[in-house]
Every structure is written in C-alpha cells, then in structure tokens.
Length: 296
Ligand SMILES: Cc1ncc(C[n+]2csc(CCOP(=O)(O)OP(=O)(O)O)c2C)c(N)n1
Image (cartoon, rainbow, N blue to C red; front, side, top):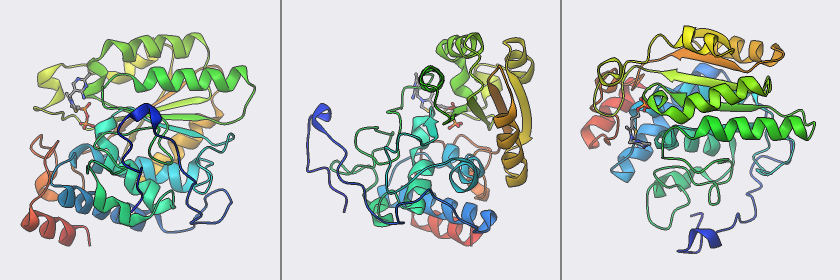
C-alpha cells in the first residue's frame, strides 16, 4: 500500500518518490477509449463499494471527459507527476475524486491496489482530493466553487511565464450556484486565458435533487457567451464529441473555452442514472454485482 507514514499534520505531508510504473515518457496509449471508459466505471463502483462510502453519480458522469483528457489530450508523465511542462487538470468538483483516482491509477501514477484503501485514514486516496498526498492531483478540493479560480490562476501563471502547457478544469452544474465561479469567469475573460479549457459536467442532478429545482442556472450557454467565453456544447458521453471539443478549444485565440458537456449522473449503471440517490452513496454487495454485470 502507498503509505503516507501516518503523518497527521497535513502541512508536513510531502510527495514521496513517484512510482516508476510506465517508463519515463509522456503518457500515450492506443487503447480503444470505449473500453477504457468501461474499465474506469468498473474501477469507480468497485472502489466506492469497498470503501462503503463515496460519490458514484458525479464520478460516472465524468468518465468520457477524463478518458479523453488523460488518454489523448493532455501531455503528462505518470512517472513524473511534477513535470513542469505538464498540462494541468483541475478537478473542481472534488467529491468526484474516484473518477480521478481511477484515471490516475490506470495511467500508472500509483498502484491500482491503492484503490482498496479509498477513504481510509492513512490512505493517500481521501474522499476529496488532496494535492500534497496524491500523485497527479493538482488541487485540494471539496469545497465547491473554487476550482475555476485556481485554474484561471494557473493559466495566468502559464501565460506570464510564457509556457505552452494548458489548463483543463472540470466543473459541475450544481457547483455553478457558487458566486466564485462567476468571478473566475469574469477574470478568465479579462486576462484572455485562451490556454484555459473548462468543462462543465452538466448532469442536471446534485446532492438533493435536480439542479433546476434547487437553483436553476440554465441556460448556461448564453450566460458563458455573454461573459465573453468561447462556448461549445456536446454530448459528454460521446467520446468523439469530447475529443473534438477539447481539440477545438486548443485552437481558440484570445478567450477561454467552456465546453458544456451534457451528461447523465450515474451513467452506465441503470439504477444510479439520473437520480440523486447515488450522489453520495456506495452500492452494497448485491448492487455492486449488478453494476459490474451492466459494465461488463
Ligand atoms: C461550498 C460547498 N457547498 C456544499 C457542498 C456539499 N455538496 C457536496 S456535492 C454537492 C452537490 C454537487 O452537485 P453538482 O455540483 O451538480 O455535482 P455532480 O452532480 O457532478 O456530482 C454539494 C451541495 C460542498 N461540497 N461545497
């Protein structure tokens, strides 16, 4: 197990030597991405079931987005998580940590067996992401609304330092009720952050029900356009649409891009789809078996 030596004061935690699992190069894979997505979904439900708690719904909705980013779009080195020239991925919806842990584990940032320790006290895989303990995690998250500000700051840093790496940030629709998101939207346009691509996992469901019933923020497209962003709308479960949108965002000059990805919360597991029930609940043994059958 990847142990952080039971350091209890988070400020004392350090990255240990990265695991040399996939050589020293930039990650690349020719694997069929639809198979990768299925595998990530199986990883997610399995690790959450083992932990007995966690957030399957918003993890499953983002699978194609992370697969496109980590398998095809981003330049990153699992053997060197702090590689200065890496593209940065910011998971603003930190409760969806399992989808990021699944992608990072599959890419070789840490042994896959670490998933079994999800949410345990001495594990580096906490319920919400922690930058100082998990290889590949760029931002400690969990308090919604902060990730776009962090991403805009990173993108501005890249511009000021004249670096070619890009920043990708994943937001969620319920999260957009946070005012800080809109402050970041304004700032990213002001600083012409065309090295920033944000992706909105627009699954329409949050912790306690449908987003439109709790705080209706739609329509997103005209709002982001009015704030000066380039906006692309896609089906977030069509991997080719996700790839195309991400590539297009790399070509845009003078403004940031928001990809509104229409997704389904709990995608891939029938009884988790489009419901708040599995926002933050682990499947029991019987439900896990059913989920894995559906994801076979
Ligand atoms: C600032 C803040 N308020 C409330 C919460 C509690 N919370 C955790 S997840 C969640 C719902 C998130 O829904 P959404 O943003 O749509 O995410 P997704 O559906 O993609 O899981 C809430 C309210 C939080 N983590 N942070």
